[in-house]
Length: 223
Image (cartoon, rainbow, N blue to C red; front, side, top):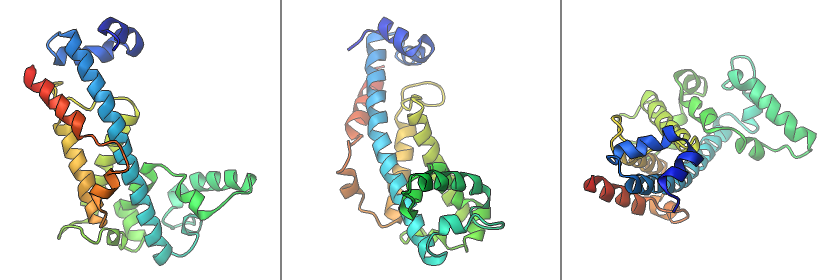
């Protein structure tokens, strides 16, 4: 493992100081924590990526039934579900057309997590026919569009922190904590179960994060 001084050169002093402060100035523990955070980020990027694929496919299947084939293209009209995304959709379609490889399935796989998240906004939920919550057949009683949008947004922001290499093993005060991670991990599993997904079977496909969560918690108890 590289030493702390090398890490400051590679990853910036400002970034590494967060870990050093959280570990009470112990450079070895700071490097250990940095390593655990990196491993947790790798594991959770896999978790969130699978969730994103499952969610977008569920949304697509729903709107294929309720809005018809090629709904992504057809809903870019004025007043349509994707009116505000018309330029993005057109750009993506044109790129596939130039390569003569356009298909609806390719379009589904081309858009960001944000694209799919915004389909749960009040405006889009209404235009989509107020039926999108049907993709969550096991949802808790009283679950609303507003609640779902807030939760999916939280998961997306968690994903973005990982993608931007931001630390996920601290609390709001900069202390070592797995609470932030655990809260979002639980939320992801809740929504998978809402979609009637066998969480254990899905997670068997990827690196499990539990081992590294436990290591962070062990380190926290030493501090």
